[in-house]
Length: 356
Image 1 (cartoon, helix red, strand yellow):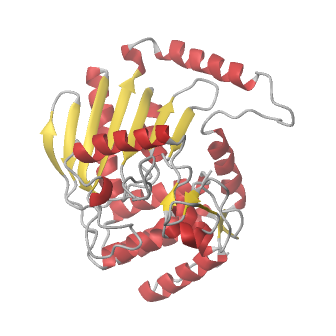
Image 2 (cartoon, rainbow, N blue to C red):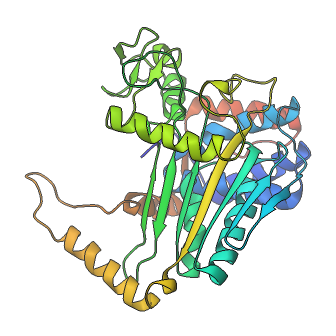
Image 3 (cartoon, rainbow, N blue to C red):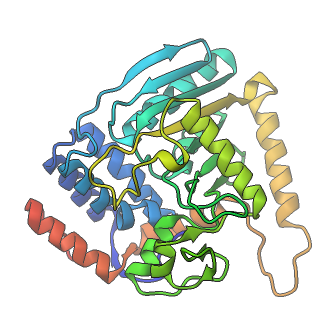
């Protein structure tokens, strides 16, 4: 879970209201500000702080202020078939293009059973699970993936050529929580390295390499080096597959062709590509039959024999659901260094940051 370990606690509603106002002050429409804020606050609530306001808000604001990302939405459907679509985002906010693409996938899957959509020339769209989970209320399986600026090397190399290239899949259940898998194809997202550097916290072994390709626990050295892929050469293969689907298939950037990391590149659009899919369960079996089967499989896993010292076996997504319940009750932790950033941002835009 890519979360912060401690910080000053703030109610989610107060952070949500402040964030929406900040975004509207820099020219984002009210509807887009609500969507963008929801994607970030939801990430914070689920403990994925690398994709919440904790990490992304100041970056998004600076990119919009400097004209690197457009505050105004300009989306165009350039290819539209019965079960597929391609949307040109024209450098609009990534979440706005993603929302349109995921909704199109769901609508088409209602008619055709399975649908696959994509966006081109877009921006960072937040947490992949946020989009995959949109399919759950429709009785569908959701999928989303996106590529990103290069932060990892191919197996045997030390030149950054692949982004964290995450993907997510959400599968509805009945009485159990849904299965929600959201992972980067690197061991951790780069945003987690950034948060550790911000707090001067050492990294865990196996997370990253320095610029010589040697393992490091120093987050500052890792910022200049490489992220470690999941599963060694297998992770490298998945990274490349995501780049082929999200970048090459959509005509967007890929691999080494990105102009730089979001927080460091304030001169050129990122030109990200993303893909979305929806599978209508009832194209294969009745939804209650499927969700009952998923419930049964989940219960079998959770009731299986535990390793010594283990009290609970988790299903992917379960920790995030637990974290959301806890943070809705107790608040979202914001590290002190990030609080200071928010105070300065509030002063700059004349929207005072709320007190804890």
